[in-house]
Amino acid sequence: MISAQTIWSKALPKLEEEMTPTSYKTWVKDIRPISVEGNTLILMAQNEMYLSTLRQFYSNIITECVNKANNSNYTVSFIIKEEAEPVVSVPVDSAGEKGVFFGVQPKYTFDTFVTGESNRFAHAAAVAVADNPASAYNPLYIYGGSGLGKTHILHAIGNYVHQLHPKFNICFVSSEDFTNDVIAAIKYDTREELRNKYRKLDLLLVDDIQFIGGKEATEMEFFNTFNALHGANKQIVITSDKSPKDLPFLQERLRTRFSWGITADIKPPEVETRVAILTGKAERDHVDITSDALLYMAEQFSSNVRELESCYNRVVLYADFSKRTTIDRPFVEVVLKDYVSSEGKHMVTVDLIKQVTADYFDVTVEELVSTRRDKRIATPRHVAMYLCRTLTDCSYPDIGKAFGGKHYSTVMYSCDTIASEIGQKLDITTAIDDITNRLTNDFNPGK
Ligand code: ADP
Ligand code: MG
Image 1: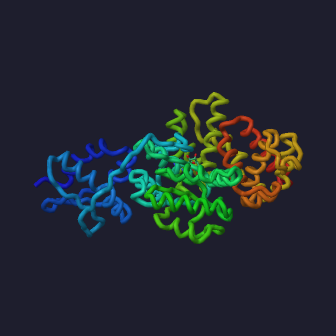
Image 2: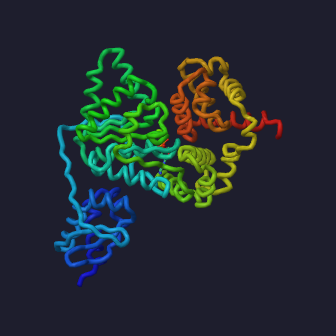
Image 3: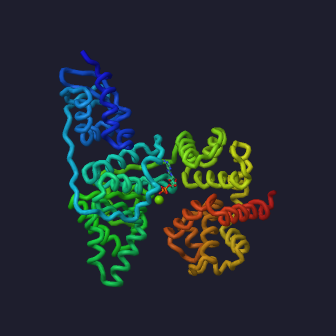
């Protein structure tokens, strides 16, 4: 009799052909063929989560490919360990007019997202949702700390669904943008248009939902949008820095709804994942960098991928300047010496950062904490906020307070902007380096 292994190895190329690379890699590659019992091919999934998703959403395509490739008529059954049960069928999608595709950044895809223990579940859930909008998990709620890939995954879902269903109406919105939309709609009396904009969507991606907490009109509007979309069987994906139950301001009814679908958290990546993220970047950038140099960087930044990336960008930028072809560990150590150093960290205060940053940019501290938005003032302010975040133990709200009572989402946005500009923009990079130097050396009496 023909073995499960043989049947499966014939089916794999067919599956690879029929599925997108991402869903193949996520769902099919690690399946293990176990045995053939009569007319049933038994396959083993890694765990409970894979089992239920495979049964629910991938069993049809797998059955079809197995039988096409083997010219057979097997039924496919999934198990984990000892257990076995029959399979269920999958829904198919429908399509309409050419869709709107709004706010999704093409550069964030599943292809460039590196998975590890820390994010495996969130990633798998995201792929399942992208493969089966509104039928896998609705809503999908992803939460975790800053710089761990939440926004990346959210865009990736948007890009993926857009590719598979060009006719879908897709919108990516930060909760700040959503709030601004609501405020504008109230001001200009255009609530009806606002509703039409959001309620015709097939996929709504909302980033950083924690920021709508406590804003009553916005919460109400979001609540209604959520209900309209969910009721019409449209997919909603939400990210946040906290789990639904830990969102302090949010009304109970929204909190409850956020837990209707599935909640997945992302944790800081393990060192292997951090190395893999850097390796991927170096490959895409065609940068020649030794593995111990990558490991050294990965060891310095353990809890935030955004900071890891800005460290990498900085190294690559300096290598470029010095016309270096190969980046090795000694070079990285030199470039990161001041950046990484946390000595003197406790000596640095918010007031000192404000003063030194203001001096550096030739503005006054009063201007720095004012509400002025022109670039001459805004850039130094962003830099100072970023330095407060990285060199002191202050939280975003603390920093907001110290800069004239700014909302913490504004602070977070400023810090993210600077972090992503380090290594990309020379003026910002040198400003951060110089000011950090002054703060940790010149002003540190211990040195
Ligand atoms: P968050 O929204 O959680 O604060 P982001 O999605 O903005 O974080 O991620 C910060 C940066 O780190 C982005 O440039 C993103 O591409 C990158 N990043 C985070 N996690 C990963 C990962 N697992 N693989 C590849 N890149 C990642
Ligand atoms: Mg984000």
